[in-house]
Amino acid sequence: MGVNNEILEISNLSKIYRNNNKSQIILDNINLTLNKGEIFGLIGKIGSGKSTFLKILGGYEPFDDGFIKINGSTNLRKYITYYPQHYFKFFRGTVIDNLMEKLELKNFNIEKKVNDDKKYQDKREFAESLLRKFNLIEKSDKKIIELTSSEKQLLTILDRLFEGKNLLIFDHPWTMGDPLFIQNLMDYVKNFCSAHNISAIIASNNINELKYLCDKVGILINGKLEVNNEAIDQFIKQIPNLFPFKPLDIPEASNSEFLIQLKDIFIKNNFKHLTLDIFKGEILGIIGKNNSDKTLLLKVISGQYIPDSGKIFYLGNNMTEISRFGRDQINILKKFGIVNQEIPEIKGLMVRDFISLIHRFKLAENIDYAIKKYQDMNLKLEILDFLLRISVFPWNISEKKIEDLGLSKEKLFEIFKELKKEELEFRIVAFLENFNIPKEILTKMIDETSFVEQKLIILAAILSLKPSILILDEFDADMDIITKRLVVNNLLKINSQYQTTIIFSTHDPSFLKDLSHRSLILENGKITEINTPEIIYTKFLETMKNSLKYSLVL
Image 1 (cartoon, rainbow, N blue to C red):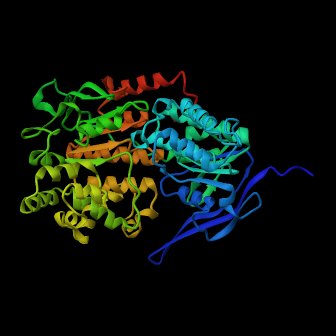
Image 2 (cartoon, one colour; image 1 turned 120 degrees about the vertical axis):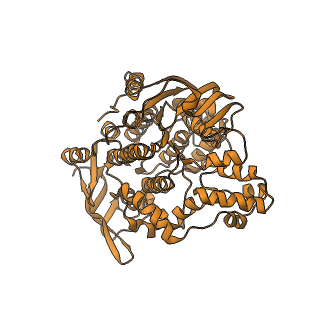
Image 3 (cartoon, rainbow, N blue to C red; image 1 turned 30 degrees about the horizontal axis):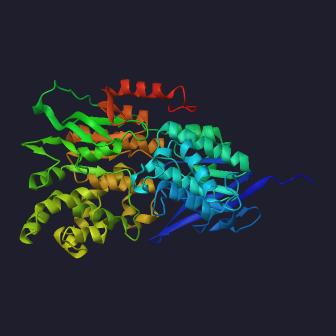
């Protein structure tokens, strides 16, 4: 009798969402088998049900029909390790402390360096070998808060790997790193699964990554799981055409034509006398490998981070130095719309209420109202300025930070007035529909939406405020190719219609080329080149071609 190599059996799995007496089929009679040591890749556009499917497999979401068996058992959590999208959970302490603590808790003795007696030195050597492999050894004694988003993802993935269960369920696990970093991580996962006969199901929006990593790839379309190349080819053909690009006439260098100027910016261990001119109405793309300080540069430009020295000027009707605090700076901050790379976990809010909070704290007339309230309360406007800078979501700031500013949660909500429901819907619905998000999503709970949907909801909310300057930090991460093109086209239309200045960072050279008027490469805190997007696209690919084993281009 032959040995049964099957680890997972899914039969006729179905899931229906019900909301306000309406029902939607999310998963429709899904069937799948997976063998020991096999890696299965899952792709699909936004809202296709990938995350729901993986939550069900992880044992964290109920389903309506069918069955799932792992090792012949329906006790999924016993045999499955589940990594949700954008899951960051750490202990206090340093990077090495976290890694060693997780090895201790998992008690998973599959590596020779982790001995039965759990000697401290053995664990430390093993933890250091992992950090060295991913070029993190120099950060071993750093606090977690000092890591980049991609490095936090890495540590969390390593934590999940060493649980020692039979099947790994990873929901978009590596979305924030540069291509070489992702390849290194994929190679480690692939070798790990092979060495220990562990199976994996990995959702990603990058087809080339999945083809490189996985034994087979499936796509979710209209609730059905298709495991064939023809379905994937049809998916690629759905990519919309690029919106006609409106070239920007970059004038000769003259102070009167710049919108933002960074002069001689210095931040210890990051920037050494960085200078950058940004033109009104341009789309500027920033690309670079991990730890090139792209996020920090965007925070400096938008006034969220004050450099050690140097100046940041906004040249509107009057020249204003953004790196100072006061009423003039508040008037500049009103012009910014910002979507940062890391979005805080949001629970217990309806989508409509979540958007209402964004408008409440970011709407220009509400900020004018807050200025008057501050003056009536004899509070310094510098405090309001600081409050608007330290968080894109001021209501999410800790009680202690608010108290340090001489406020309370109650006063904070008193200072910023609430919008009426009708006014909110009038402002937001068209912008949601531009991203193919129906009006009905307003009545869903925000934590029932996918991470990409949350990003699009935030972007729609920000765009509906019609900012003069839009800052997007790796906004395209996590997105499928169809959604990326949808975002590009909408941003190009916004730029063309309102002359909105857009400054964004990315790891995707194609996204960079499609969206920007000018592009720059940032490396070790320096702008190594600023040029046309086509030239930067080619040069960035050149830096990867000898090391990268999978294609960055479809």
